[in-house]
Length: 110
Length: 113
Image (cartoon, rainbow over the protein chains, first blue to last red):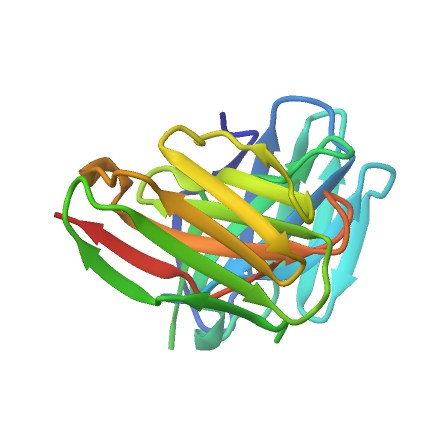
């Protein structure tokens, strides 16, 4: 069963705008990860955030985690056409395999 | 990029035939995973391995078997392929389970007619 659920399913924005994707999950977690998948390729890891962390940054990416609401958000600032991809969240409960959500398809229009 | 190679990259076969997909890594990672990706379902875990000859089932393991006789190779076998197993299959590796990133291959597109 899917642990994480991303929202929205699809998002279309103009280049230069910010993109926000959300992930909700059902049970307590140890870590939450975000991945990107370009068309026809495998997933690429973006950020890992631990359950005792609230926010992490990596370049133009900002991830927040609210364990009380069982949710996380991924913010991409100043989006570029190259950011067009599907984005997935994945959770683990400690010594368990990752469980992936169904993803958000982001289209950045130049 | 992490050294992960999936073979073949594309395969078309007929219902009822056996199919074996191979994942080869050069990173000496302990954990290896097989996923399938289907529209509307995201990525689902089929089987995974936490060492040579140590494997466990994932969410959608029925109809699939795996083997890992060497650290670097993880094989996924469909003993008798069915049309419902038409999918894109991804292999991933990680040093540990859960608290480290997984690194993915570029997938095998399998069509079963």
